[in-house]
Length: 156
Image (cartoon, rainbow, N blue to C red; front, side, top):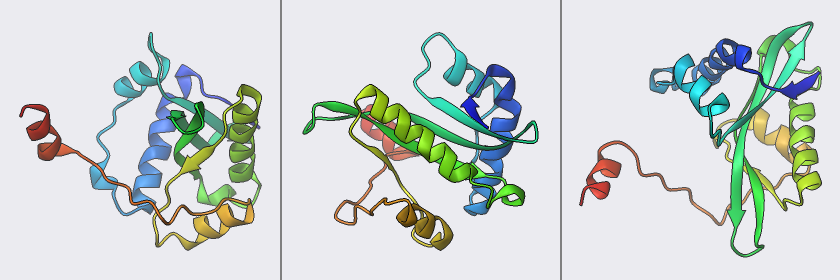
């Protein structure tokens, strides 16, 4: 079953975030707290959303997403920040169901794209995405300002 997240899902969402980070070899980089997730996902002005996959009444996967805007198309899109399904329930169709629900939301609202990034070494995910019809955007390179560089620029 796929459904929107509720505030009482926050502990499970944080658990999945940590499991994803561990899979991506970056658990040490997770700083999110339950309090932050409550505020950002369910506060007065939420800017990110979560879909939950349930398996036998337990949160078994999630998709974290937010809106983007295409100046060329003049429409919003969905950026999929994280998609993760517990390894023990992979193969049950939850990953596809989560992406299908995101595509449904985009289509229903007139958004023209759903996009995301994947680590170049994550061959199982790349194969899964390609099987769904997704195509890499190899002509673009992602840049990120963070930490001291972000602070330095902001204060310059």
